[in-house]
Image 1: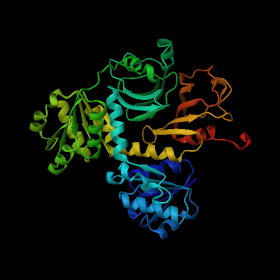
Image 2 (image 1 turned 30 degrees about the vertical axis):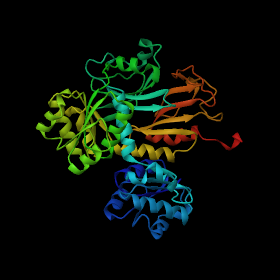
Image 3 (image 1 turned 180 degrees about the vertical axis):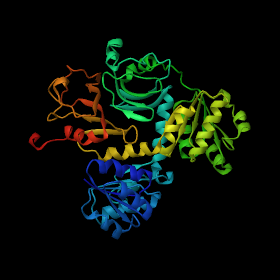
Image 4 (image 1 turned 45 degrees about the horizontal axis):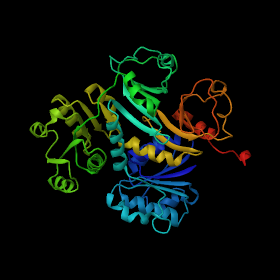
Length: 458
C-alpha cells in the first residue's frame, strides 16, 4: 500500500513507524526539515519537506498513485485542505484527517464531510477518543486499560499484579485448571518496562502488568482472581477543563449522575465557559499543584483523580500530590513516551497515552481483510485485532492444535452466534466466527493475509 502521511509529529512518526515495518510504501510530508531528517534517518520511508496541503508538495510525495492520505499535522485547516486536494486533484481513494477543534465536529455541520463538500472519509478527534478511553478505565476499577470488543461481548483488560495477587508465581497453563469455567486468556505482559508475549510456562510476577482477554460476563471474577475488587468511584476530581475534561464531565452527568465530580481549571475564562455547559459538576479555578486549592476541593475524599491538563509535568505532579494527600487512585494523561516507564515506580496507577489511542484509530483504517478493529497496546509491542474468519482462511476447519499459527500470534477469544468461546487445542474455528487475537508487530502482515478474501473464493 502506498501511503502519504502529512505531519511528522508524534502521531505521524508513529504511524510511519508501524507502516514502514510492514513494507508499505510510506512518504511523510512536513514543513520542518529537522523532523523529516529524523524520520528518514530512522525509518525506511521517504520524506518531503513542504506545506502538506500544497498540490505541488503532494505531487512530489507521490499523490498521483497513492492509496491513502493520512493528515495529522497540528493544524485542522491544513489537514482538511490536504484531504480536499488529495481528492479533487489526485483522486486518492481514502483520506483520514485529525480534527481537534470541536466547532468543526458539531452535529449540525455533519453534512460538511461528504464527497461533494469536504471529502474526508474518516475523522479522528483525539480529545473525544481520549475522554472515551479514560471513561472505560473509570468503569472498570482496578484496570489499567479496558477495550470492549465484539460488540461488548469480549473485553481486553490490563491489570497490575501486586504482591498480594493470588496468581503470582503461577504458570499460565494452570489458569484453565484453577478456573475451568472462566473464559480468560493472558495475551501480553509488561515487565520492568519490557513487553513480553507469554508462553504457557511463563509465570506472573509481582509488578507485572498483565493484559488478558475475557468474556464480558466473567470480567468481575477475572479481576478478583488478579486481586482487584475495587469499587466504582463515586467522588471524582478532574484536573484540567480542556476538551477532554469537559467531555468527561458531560458524559458523567449524562450516564453516571450519581457520581460527584469536580473540575479544577487554571484559566478563569475557560473555567467560566465550561461551568456554563455543566449542570451538576463543580468547577474551581486555580493550579492543581496548589495544596490549599486541593484541600478546598476535598481531595482527601476523592476516590479517583483524573489528570488531563495539556501539560505532562502538571499532570504528574498534581497526581502525586493528590495521592500524598489521601486520594486513592490516579488516572494520568501523558503525551511524552519518555515519562511512561518512570511512572509506575512513582505511584501513578493508570497512564493514558493519547498518541497510542490516535494511532489505534488510524491503524484500523489501514488494515486489510475482514478486520473490524485494531488497538495498539504499547509502542512497538503489537496490536490487538478483532477480525471475521472467512471460509478460505487457514484458521478455519481444523482443530487449533493442527493450525500453523504465525510466531507472535496469540488467540484470545472466539465469538460464535453471540457466545464467547475460549480457544483450546480442540477448538475448531468456523466461517463468520469473530476472532480476537494479539499479534506482535512483525506478525501483523501475516494476520492480515489470514483474514483476506482470496481470488479462488469467487
